[in-house]
Picture 1 (spheres, each protein chain N blue to C red):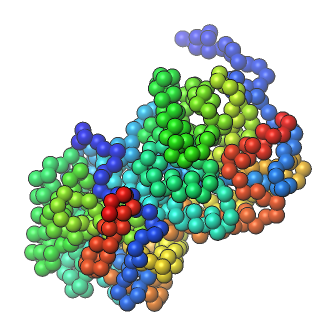
Picture 2: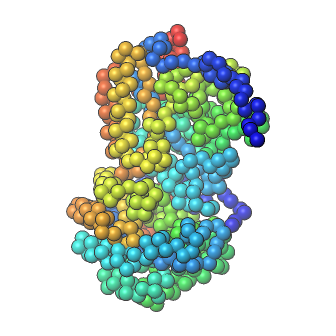
Length: 308
Length: 308
């Protein structure tokens, strides 16, 4: 555990949502819409880390372990069918060890031209208090593993189990990651302050994340569909003035249960049924943003904070 | 072994309260209060703008709504910061549209971090309420009187200097308190406190440093309480606001003016999927005849001007 605890992570400057440069998307789309399935593997007996035990019950925590394992065995396949139906390619937030454990899932996603980005090695290996060199090993492992199994060079990052160090963003930029999903402070992409190079945040979402809705906010499936549609409606309306991003982060073990899949389908049908929606992936949003908006955003942020 | 004899001594057992801060008083038996322009209900919307430090303190408890996972909890830090960057502008736009004049509470450290946000509020002429220093610095009996006095002075001082307003309303972060808090608020020029949730109307308080009033800042028509802690939906929150208005409006027919207090956290209600529900609720409230949208200090001025 770091003893140097800061009030502010120092990753971005204040940038009010009003009076920003107009954000545009391809073909005049108002909303860049992407779905990020978390394809995860939780170890039955991970090494113990005092900062955060992996399981709430004594090992083996059969209930929690199997509840998650369901995603890979059953939920993923049901979720993928629905995404196919509405032409939505996933941006897979991948515990890269799934490449070794369940190559069939990787192959099915790759066949559909889905994007893979990294969500660490396992969701039971946390980064709290890790040295920079140790964190670099995880990042390098993710690059190497995904490229070996899919031919793709990863562009995005979501820290495993959302565990970070002070250096995480610096190390991602250093390794050539284009975008992080770890910041939840905006509905538009934004530059992230790093030691060297460039990094942006692409809005992922906790509020629209199936696990947060089902297991933290304790909402029902029908309610989830209602929330997703309301979220889209607002971002679509605002997108007429300046582009927005909506992400549905999923966990196949949650969204892919029989009693829940229809809520997800209802949202995809609704969202993709609108004309001015760019159904895309995290990497495509990031690449477009770097090419068209990064510089004007950086200038606008500097101006908002007294720079030029 | 029985309980000690002292356990059966009841030193405050008598008519009224067991402390001297305020008098026992029955709401429906008080003199009627009249609001300006013959309004029946004063609508007091308070927008809470907060800074939850990444290294949020937790003495003597962790302010609810703050950091949850081990340090660094970027997840909750950035979700709360969302309110100050994005959500607040959705909320302000809605208040403008409905012609609502709110009070806006600030942690003084937030004003220092985001001076343009403080200036935005001050330029609108909206009342600023001092909400302590930040959400990690609570008021409690483990602080010496001098230490707590410094917190009160810092919060009032920063906000008065930055806003040019007298800033006479006080709301302790998370409604935390020591036995000295009321004395210190009065000593530092406060006219009212928002921490007590025991009435629907203002009422006078007595302190060692002069008079104060308690203003009925709502805890259970507070979006954080209803949606984060009680885990109800934004629609259920909206219904409760409308239902409360119905009751207060009816009571005002023979009991005099009432106050409807609604507390809005932009990190909660300013999320895309929630803003429309807030709009429905406030639109319904404001569509009554004889409502008066007013700030805390305006309500207090009107209240104090009448014989009690």
